[in-house]
Length: 162
Image 1 (cartoon, rainbow, N blue to C red):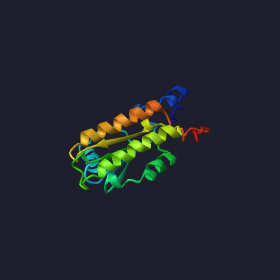
Image 2 (cartoon, rainbow, N blue to C red):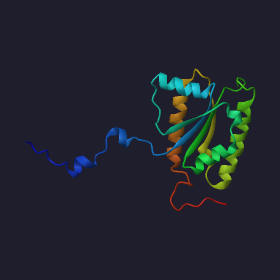
Image 3 (tube, rainbow, N blue to C red):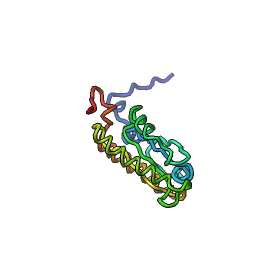
């Protein structure tokens, strides 16, 4: 019977490369079914890597996104949110993505006023064939939100401006 030596403090405290580079921020991606969700699916099929902290929420069309969905995502712990719809002029529901773009623009101003920060919300337009672009957007948003740090709603004891 052999006895394994106990790990020293030095070996036990060294995180693996995967743990050290794991993103700490949470991002919610509201994606339309026809284009952005298909792009996310293509990114997976192509085995493209993007941060695992991006949670994809399927929508029939971004034009149907209620601003409360976005606000609720922040309230429920998201540090950042992006809305991804069809390319402009190619929405399967005619102008749904244009309505979403307008809502996102207004919500960004509201988030700035509330002290959360409008830069934590963004709108992207993708086609279903842009899997690499979806992965790039996910990495871009993770980098942006990581630089900003946790949402003011997630900081212990932080107060949001009235």
